[in-house]
Image (cartoon, rainbow, N blue to C red; front, top):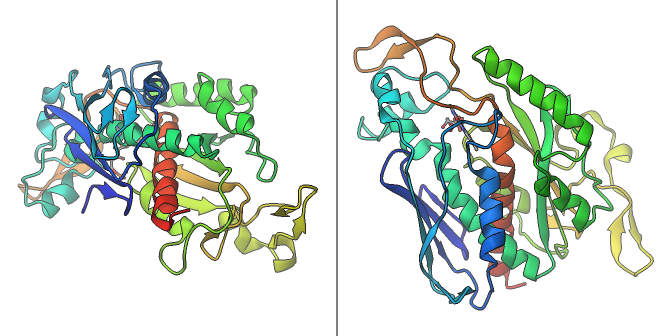
Amino acid sequence: MSSILGNKLKVSIFGESHGKGIGAVVDGFPAGVRIDMEELGKFMARRAPGKDKTSTPRKESDIPEILSGMLDGVSCGTPIAAVIANSDQHSNDYKNVAAVARPGHADYTGFVRYGGHNDVRGGGHFSARLTAPLTFAGGLALQYLASRGIFVGAHLRRVACVDDAAFDPVNLSREQLLAPGAAGFPVIDPDAEAPMREAIEAARLDGDSVGGIIEVAAVGLPAGVGSPMFDTVEGRLAFGYYGIPAVKGVEFGAGFAAADKRGSENNDPFLVDDSGRIVTSKNDHGGVLGGITSGMPVIARIALKPTPSIAKPQDSVDYVKNENAVMEVRGRHDPCVAVRAVPVAEAVTAIVLADMLLEQGV
Ligand SMILES: Cc1cc2nc3c(=O)[nH]c(=O)nc-3n(C[C@H](O)[C@H](O)[C@H](O)COP(=O)(O)O)c2cc1C
């Protein structure tokens, strides 16, 4: 079960970064959903590398070949399988990784876990390349949700200590939600782009990297989705988010800041709005109470660490010889993984929410 997400909508991810190809099998996707392939392609292109200096120059087409489960652009209800060929591998860049652990990577832990049989080239199955098929599956889930009036969007809330504006947690329109994803650089406030890009470029030129925070939200969800104790919306989303490489923190609504508030400040007053809907006047609960959606926007923030592969020499170990070593990471890398992870966060959110809706039959 290690690379499978979901109960009713089950997404299984396979492949290695420098193997022949990678892909996804999406089981339980409802029949009769018309998939706009152009939109799916655009969504996946937001994650693809090689676009500008904020991402690795590795060029991959990321175009999925759909093998099953779709006929004339409409889902059949049977498993949808898709493969993406790997075409721009530089496996020699990873020759010295075979026994010297790259700090911040899974080389050592993967070696121990799989008795040395894991494919280390390009990070193997741990590689963020695996987020391409995840984004394919998420693109399908996004279109299913959209057909039900539910929308998911995300933006870079913070990069290297530079902040973007936050989503309006109460009156978040579909247009506001989707605007950052449609922009070339995923921020709400256009003034945040230049300082973020400068911080990323400064780190890159210094042979270093920076981290960031992604804010992701969903609107249009009905109240009443999710169950205590362990099938909570927060729990299921967090489980998915932690599958994204480099994710080190997840919070919902006020998150960790709630710990510094008084109850009177943190509680969100209920009211009946002009259309007779039960809403809250603010949204520190992030759209989830008792693990169940309240009908307010679901809002999460995901912290991503700085890219572990940096050009500077780093102290490490040769885990076969059991001796100290110095690691000089070669290869091509994202100086800030958070940028390309924005659509990945949307993909995971869509898969989990679609799965929970289908599972609950609502
Ligand atoms: C979209 C995306 C792109 C990434 N690109 C790189 C990269 O170019 N170089 C790198 O060292 N890590 C990259 N990572 C992060 C590593 O894959 C990840 O840190 C590593 O596999 C260890 O896993 P962990 O950080 O979850 O413990 C990327 C992550 C994401 C989400």
